Length: 451
Image (cartoon, rainbow, N blue to C red; front, side, top):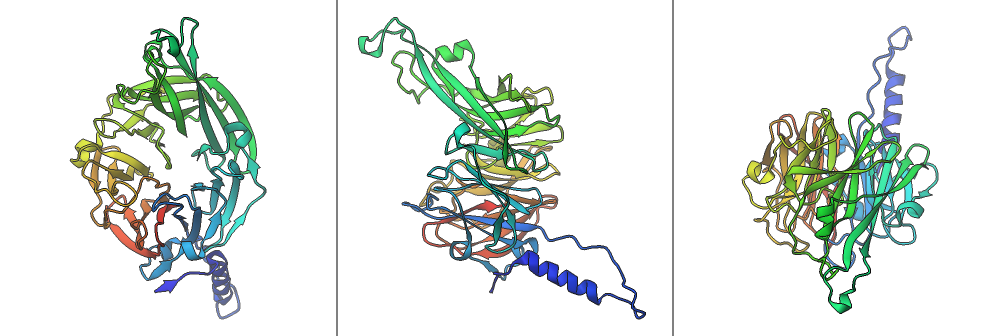
């Protein structure tokens, strides 16, 4: 079993220089051919156990190989023993450049929480920091939700929402009146970050109210995440989660009706004029969790929802910045399961995606419900479980973050909590699945994706 510890970029460069020096004809004239493309780097992210198996709170380690090495089942990758420790108190929030050559990180929680850093991917455990760190904590706190916009690796966006219950003067909970609660004010903050020059571009705060009827029932936006740039580049869509209080008591109410899925739309790059749009197809949340939850494709933005009592859907926001309710894509119907829950997903440029999910039939593993991968077609609105990837009750995908995309191919990690596994490469055009390099695990830990 091969173990990779080389600086693969340097090795490739030396090899190419050697080949160039040897390529000449008999009369000493150099024969110049086309320059070979540099290999796509694939970075594997691993989350170490904190107190409990699968919690990922012990820190994040990354390790990179070339795409050729990632596809080689004789290669063994040991990030927990040999990886680069990403600065973060808990699981780091990672993003990658479109070509895989750069890793972007914002530390999550702790003394360094909110610090943005970027690294040149040099192979193995070698990640060289580019420029200086910058803190976005003064704008969005030390545990920010952030994402890299798909604008050629130029911009990142981080968001938060703060809430405050508002009361009138007619009563308090202590005197058991029915009308003391009025509404919950939700204030959204968003900061944009220049990823190239490591500096703040813009910051704005805005109120994001729901309808008067929804607010009277105690609903409010309680969490936001996953800003996504539209095709025109003039709007951001931000996923939202709704919560509820009981208007009669002012206490949290988790038993209320699940409302239709919503997103916040605001002007870009000014970050002004937010509006809340509502789906007529899906119910529940659109903020996702650890992975990007919405993607622009073919002029529209496709967004997953979670917590839908009818199972997760993929929703579409059209070029008019409204939900397209004629687009109905139910994962329950497509997969033939009940209570499908989209954990993470990523499309290739051809509109076909790899999607991580669980459902009502998932086994309960050591860290939560068992996960699966499916191949999804956004155009045909079809989904099929990828059976060529092995599954285990302890295969846990709730914290999954990254899918490396190289043309039609998408790279995923497969390893149950605390067990070894492999990289798998899904050809989205053909459906072919290739078993790649071995992933060496340690007790209680798991892998959270490729970048």
